[in-house]
Length: 307
Image 1 (cartoon, helix red, strand yellow):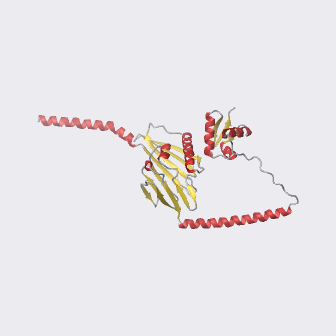
Image 2 (cartoon, rainbow, N blue to C red):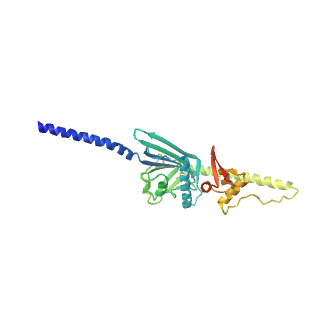
Image 3 (cartoon, rainbow, N blue to C red):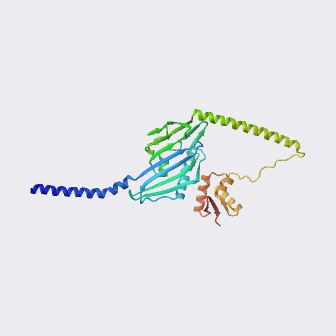
């Protein structure tokens, strides 16, 4: 009886000890399990792509602001432009950052969204995706993670050079379990379906007819107008066209002086013929050097020259 009582006592102690250890370990396991990155890229038929990034972390992880995300994306797009030799843009009005807290799991879910213009290469009846993708692309953003890529309903996907995990033809979704599996850049060709191609061809034919008729009418009106002229009109060279600057920052300062010391950031792009990416990077450097300052008014960024 004494031995049996002693055995039961020891067994109770061990059970209590196991319960205490599990209680201490559960929060650690929960925190470790919430680390997750998920990328969803929705390819549009005009070459742009709507990105949505879901980052699940512990509650102590610092969220990034819209401005910090915008700067991170501009740096990535400049890198992608050098690889692809295509002019790409980030739509600043599309940037969104949302945060949700889950106290039950001690986790935080951050959702980032933005529109990347000209991400894909557009060819006749074809969209090519993947020339700017590799493991480093995603490390630059938020780290390695899971990737979903969707494409338009009137296209069929042909995939090469990619460790694709699975494909769902009904939802038109390509799925990679891990972005680090991109040992080579994926080559994804989206081919326009036959029915859609016929529709596009008919639309293009109608467009050509309309343009041709418009040109004929314009030429007839021009020739008719010339007959009525009694004097010869001498065409003057177009003035005021800004040449590509030797020193981009100096050109921006000159434009600011001409504009009275302040101007919209979008007007700098238009008047100096810079891409939005290049303009944003130049202004960021000038702002650091205290040459200019920027204020956001509504959807516009106003650039001011610092005296």
